[in-house]
Structure formats: structure tokens, C-alpha cells
Image (cartoon, rainbow, N blue to C red):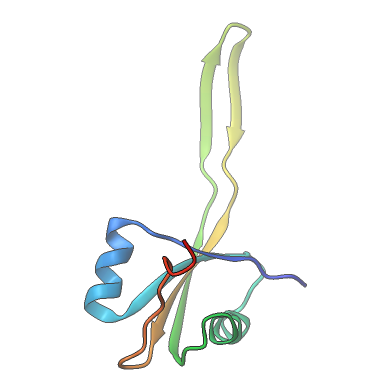
Length: 96
């Protein structure tokens, strides 16, 4: 099973990084905490202390068009909050 992981860079996520050394990632819904921990440690070369996950449910969406009301859903996804060891950090902007 291939696990996809991408960082979430928002104002709230940046506040968590500065205050608690906690990084936010969007991961595959099938991924568990052990897989997320090993993937972050291998990708970024850091020591992970704790992983918290949140299942974000899909939302119902609707919009009016010429042909009438269209209804659909957003996709469900999983959010992972990864706490790193003291003194370690991840630089997301190093490859830019």
C-alpha cells in the first residue's frame, strides 16, 4: 500500500510549529500512526515523539447551474499532527 503524505501550510499549522514543534500533514485515510511515524522519520531525517490523527469527514456540497441543482461530496481525508523531538525541525522551503 502506497501512503501519500503532504504538508499542510496554513497560519494555524505555522502557529503549532512555532509553539509546540508540531507539524501538520495530509495523509492517506488508510495510513496508521506507525506508518506515518516511519515515513516522516525516513523522509525528513527527524525523530518523531508522537503522532495524533484526525479523520476529516466528507461534506455535502451543492451548487445551482443552468440545468438545475448539482449535488456532490468532498472527499474524506486524514490529518496527522506529528510532534518532533526537542531541537529538531523540518524545513519545507529548502527545495524551493
